[in-house]
View 1: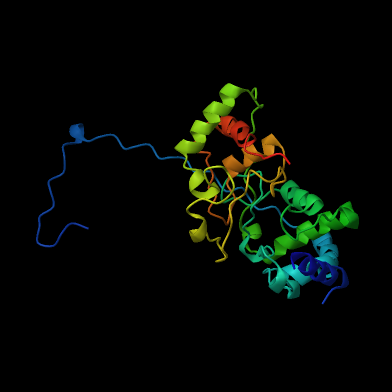
View 2: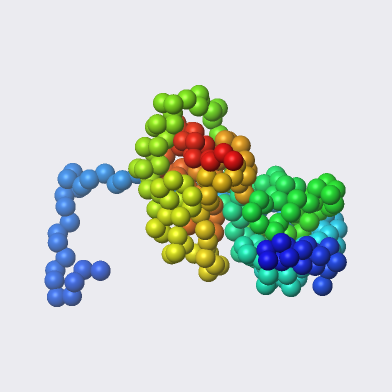
Length: 271
């Protein structure tokens, strides 16, 4: 059934269609007894917006109408004609929420992030790789996609997260990674063996109100946001915007993240 759905969707893409009252406030403490103010936690400053290239946007309009509109819709809201048959649903560009990025949680993606997605597509979805349309068309439509959300005019993407060199993938690292897995309660979503069948699965909803299933680490090395160990590390640190998968950048050290990467790679069940 899913194969026939994919065929229908693919043909459509290619062919188109205060103080309490009554109480006196306490007297102020003597100046010498006052505690020093706690330092404010610095928040990442929003980057300035990058002006759109109008020539690329103009060319990208045609590319979008030819290849993207049937799934993502004429307004970029993910409600194209084919969307009714697709699960997971196409991306809603009007929200400016992107799952796979190299930037911190909540940030817009970089241009390179968008280009990568267009070139390689998303595993386990109906989003195919679009390298066949050529580099210029890919770059043009990436620019056009930014016109659907005002956020692109208000700010730019933050600097990508830094990925340190991968340490040795040995038994000690994997054992530590298993501890990291337990300490962060990863099994609540991904399940005790990593099959994506944790107790929280029935309650997991994305930002658009769709039920979402956690990744199954036992079945495939092909992941939406990249297949390499560095890609998996990056996902821990950026989180997956629009989903219940958070960023662990503030709660997991780089060493712990690499240990978790190494542990997760042991869950894959070879055919």
